[in-house]
Amino acid sequence: LKVDVSAQNARKIPDTLFGIFFEEINHAGAGGIWAELVSNRGFEAGGPNTPSSIEPWSIIGNEYTISVATDRSSCFSRNIIALRMEVLCGDCPAGGVGIYNPGFWGMNIEDGKSYSLVMYAKSSENTELIVSLTSYDGLQNLSSATLRVPGTSNWTKLEKKLVAKGTNRTSRLQITTNKKGVIWFDQISLMPSDTYKGHGFRKELVSMLLDLKPQFLRFPGGCFVEGNWLRNAFRWRESVGPWEERPGHFGDVWGYWTDDGLGYYEFLQLSEDLGAAPIWVFNNGISHNEEVNTAAIDPFVKDILDSLEFARGSKNSTWGSVRAAMGHPEPFPVKYVTIGNEDCSKKFYNGNYLKFHSAIREAYPDIQMISNCDGSSKPLDHPADLYDFHVYGDSNTLFSMKNKFDNAPRTGPKAFVSEYAVSGNGVGRATLLASLAEAAFLTGLERNSDVVQMASYAPLFINDNDRAWNPAAVVFNSWQQYGTPSYWMQTIFRESSGAMLHPVTIDSVYSNSLAASAITWQSSNGSFLRVKIVNIGFNPVNLMVSTTGLKASVNTRKSTVTIFTSKNPSDENSFSNPTNVVPVTRELPDAGEELSAFLGPCSFTSFD
Ligand code: AHR
Image (cartoon, rainbow, N blue to C red; front, side, top):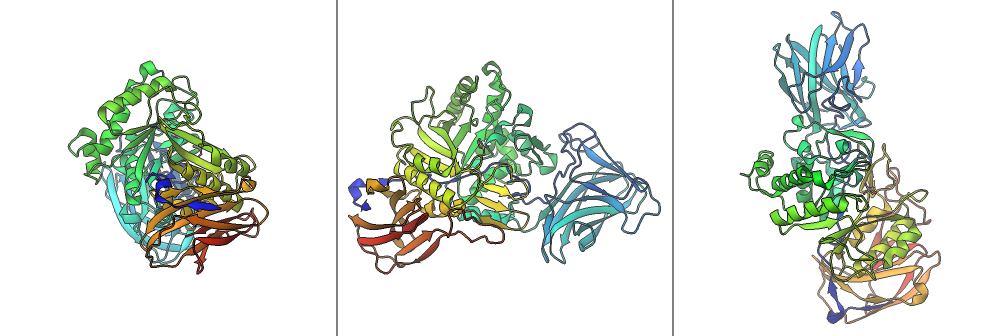
């Protein structure tokens, strides 16, 4: 394998090359990175009609002691449903009667940590409530406090900090009383006090994202943006402002309700916290089953211009002031938007696209617009800065796709490979083999990074309790998380964004089993050449790696070799063995212009 490190043959890789794509799928947000512990906090999950679904809220008591219903009596006009609880017993059982919420498959309550409870209640009589964190069966008490609801005809906001005196991974929040009478509840939230930067994100999951050094954050979907039906598409407007006032919505593609605590603002905040450029994918009037005719699309265009004012407008502008009131007077630097998701073949896509495109270009000339139409084989018939490209397939497919962009047009819009993964029927497992095929594909993107500007794996997250789309990069439950081999592979490519790319040549006998790339990159320890080689074959390969044009640099750490392999190509990571398949790095004392490399079967090797 020959690496030409000469300056004249080097090319800079775009700073934006590798980032992440967050979709509200697999409970990635609700019950995932968004740390809210209560599920369906406003009893709104069934929509604005009564009777509404109060799931997963349940009742403590029986038909002789308590009666629970929903009605339209909330103090919040955009989420009008509230819970009406009538306590029938004068002499209630010990502990009282009431309701409990198990969160998302149980709340992770940890010893010594504090949790902020906020809720709204109304009763015509003074009523004492006991709020507690307990085990899933209510038998172990982890924390409890008393709250007093004043007897008035108005709603009262009640707040309490609960400190846990024990750990239980599958806890619940319960609210009970002994007082006979009627009481209404609405908007009940329980947040851990130690979220990332106090912004509401689960720290351990953010930390895994930070380790990827993502250059951009594409959000919030995916199909989540479209909805099966337009009424269930993601609407940014309904997801900003005070959390209590957000109506929430049913994400009908992935089949679950979200309270939209993780809304448009929070996505922008997350991208800032990650140091990643926000890429806002918006609904373009098209869902899986419906389309808005271009003749009627203008209000949708206006809505998206408002979303951009929300992000970028001054704090005195109409929507910028809403952002400022939420705690971010400075604008968020939205420089990219994607017009729809996977909608190129839809009847009104082109017409709608052009309407959005010209309005955004006029109002925000610097915003780069991403089309859903594939420009890799033929030029687009509409103006765009980038085109969106998605690829899922088995490991053979991804491996062979390493050459996909070799013949893509060198002029015109660049590619945004915003979704790639070894995935699909029968192949959807996050194995070592999958990550090797993805690595080969990524070396092809590096090589073609004159026309591929950005790339992200999909999906990013999977809650182990809702494996709607398998696999994903990071697997978690209420208290644990681990990276799949695909996640770990991405950590080895993170330095490529903004690095210098150097040509490599491999003997053509290896074209069906090897893939390689070379970069030079700067770290705090000096300047390094990184040669990455994938061997997806089932035989070992002995290779001589020789470099020309290498300049000596003063580095404060030794050269290293990183090997990513396992006993079996189908090996995976798991909660019980989270580091079964991870890269292992050791020093390489004899690194020079030439080195002999032993590439094990089904392995990835990287020399720094
Ligand atoms: O990543 C999962 C889904 O795959 C996305 O929602 C969609 O864009 C694609 O079909």
